[in-house]
Amino acid sequence: MLAHLINGISLGSIYAIIALGYTMVYGIAKMLNFAHGDVIMVGGYVSFCSMMYLGLPAPVAILAAVFVCTVLGIVVERLAYKPLRAATSLAVLITAIGMSYFLQNAALLIWGANPKAFPNMFKNIEAIEFAGARVSPVAIVSIVANLIIMIALTLFTTRTKVGKAMRAVSEDKGAATLMGINVNFTISLTFAIGSGLAAIAGVLLCTAYPTLMPTTGSMPGIKAFTAAVFGGIGSIPGAMIGGILLGIIEILARAYISSELADAIVFGVLIVVLIFRPTGLLGKQVHEKV
Amino acid sequence: MNTVLKCENLHVYYGSIHAIKGVSFEVGEGEIVTLIGANGAGKSTTLNTVGGLLRPREGMIEFEGKSILGVAPHKVVSEGMALCPEGRRVFAQLSVKENLEMGAYTRPASEIPETLEKVYEHFPRLKERENQMAGTLSGGEQQMLAMGRALMSKPRLMMLDEPSMGLAPILVDQIFEIIQALNKAGTTILLVEQNAQMALSIADRAYVLETGRIVNTGTGKDLLNDDSVRKAYLGG
Ligand SMILES: Nc1ncnc2c1ncn2[C@@H]1O[C@H](COP(=O)(O)OP(=O)(O)OP(=O)(O)O)[C@@H](O)[C@H]1O
Ligand SMILES: [Mg+2]
Image (cartoon, rainbow over all chains, first blue to last red; front, side, top):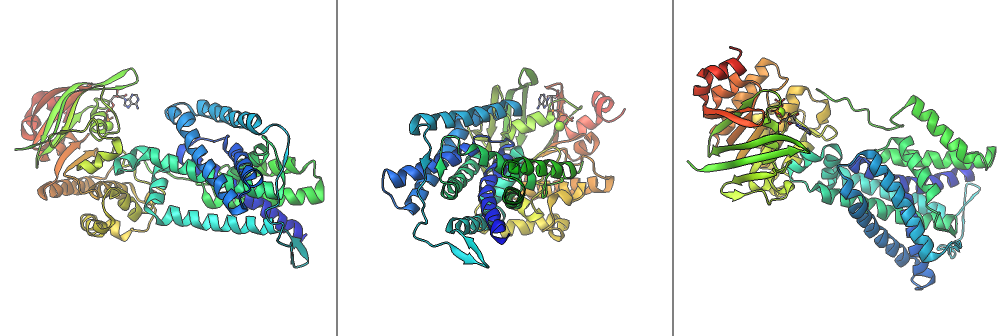
């Protein structure tokens, strides 16, 4: 039981890191970036190639993945989403879905359809015994990474000038512009942060589940999106709680109910939560004064 | 008198809607100038265009002798003008203090505490509520915050879009007193108001806007006594 719980928290931590990207981008650009999941996959391939073909050590490979994905996030926003800033949300959504397939097909062209076996970055580290349960190193790294990222992002958005400006832009772009805030830069920065985090999530995910394919990012992407909605889209702590709960539910359902039904149960829980709390667990219920 | 703001032959469109049709006006240093007009006349559109939120399709805007049409929208405030937009538009999820800090976004951090104190002198209520979320302030407090936020950039020209909207009469008086005090302290004011009576009585000069065109202009006093203005905007 304890082992399942820890595995759940660890998988949930990865979902949470991905969900942050969804939630931050939604908060700022009011769009669902469905290509976000595929950035995870790109991060996986970049770190895979860095280690297997270039022989780089794991930490450098992670940095390379973060760098490439950050740039990718900025470029995708610039080329695909920025021209649609004034378009209807449906047009943006369709573009995001198109971008998702584009990235998957590009990966198919570059890396082929054959699954790659992702190397174990932590093979020198023994699994730890914790209260009678075996906990793999990647599980601990995921949980710790998630905690550090959460704290760093919370400090960033509440304590720094640029972080506060990000919150201002997410509320009212016009008013933010009047303050002298560069809205385009802020949006780029948000995509950059979200995509950099997706790269980290990609490496963790591929280490925990070491099969890498062009479609590797889709399912975790959709689940992390679910986690973001579950926690309350737009909310940073919501992404964390949503992600972790989702991970726990998924692992417990797989262990005790049925591995085939696990995903259905995950989405079932989401539906129930949304019936009772349409804005998600920590979603903002804004009362606007007139 | 030096001209602070000069707009000439402005044409502004929303898609195919021609909202501003050749508007020209000037604001001199130290003046209070008001734009009055019925709903939909184009007052907000004019202010938003000067503030950089909208681009005119034609025409010219000069601030202190320099064209600001080539200036990026987010850099207009650094030129020395601030717009306190219609409907307040405070950042509801940011605290009062954070809202004010955003107002000083383009200024060096070392100068912020001093300006903050000045704004709190004008609006003591904001200091009491420094850490409260702006969204939970009352309407009047939000208006004060919106004005204080605009002041944080230390503008030489302050544009106010309907600062008295939705406020109780006593608060309206207070807001107008503050506008006059700001003006006495050296800030040039461009004021848009539904409350034409109040606006004209504190304005040095005024322009009357009607469906995107300026149809009348004069000193505040002249227009207060002008028959057509009285009929249209002052209720007889
Ligand atoms: N975003 C928009 N899209 C299309 N048309 C607009 C938009 N904003 C304003 N308009 C139109 O432009 C014209 C001028 O509007 P504006 O908001 O400038 O009026 P106003 O004088 O400020 O009115 P009010 O006193 O009601 O605030 C109106 O006819 C309005 O319908
Ligand atoms: Mg208006």
